Image (tube, rainbow, N blue to C red; front, side, top):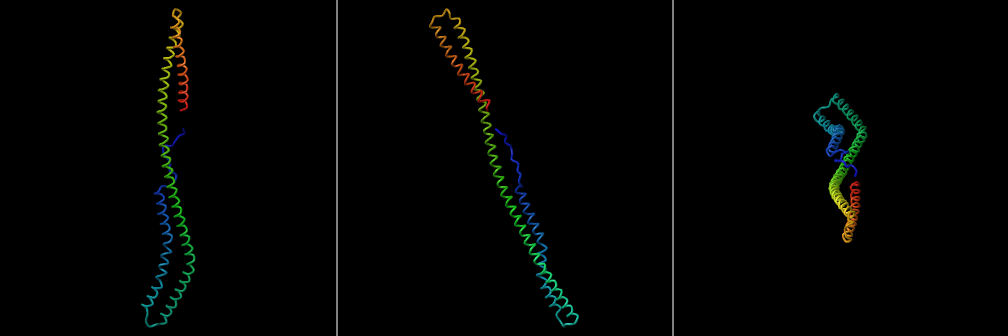
Length: 213
């Protein structure tokens, strides 16, 4: 039986690591997108502010005010052209950020699925470990029973050998016995010899089984 680890080492990030990675990804996305969002907000509010200033400054026109209005109008047009030139780049960056965000979300989803698979594998390995431990305990109990049986057979073998020796001595000294008693002793010796052979064979089988386990 091979060695079975007592515990399973987790090689993939935990659920807390996955959630932290997702939070950091969202925060990085917001930090990257915030400057463009603020710039768009300013761009939306600036025409209203310009009209408010024009309304406040309404009155008799003068050459200086006309010059200022022309200059402001030129600045607004130049700023509008500059903003229009920036828009394609901003949209491209926004699309890049969105793609990165989608990729991060996909990675988080994959990590979550991997974590679930690892948890299932860990539970399966734990069940297999419990089964293996139960089998080891069963083998230990079986070995103890085999040892007891082997010891009992050895004792019976010693007893049979002792009876065999006694009968052999009795037969050798039976010159003065009648034929019936002599035949009885010989029959008993034959029975004990067969029993002794049977015990030897059974003991050999038990010892072989014990060595394999």
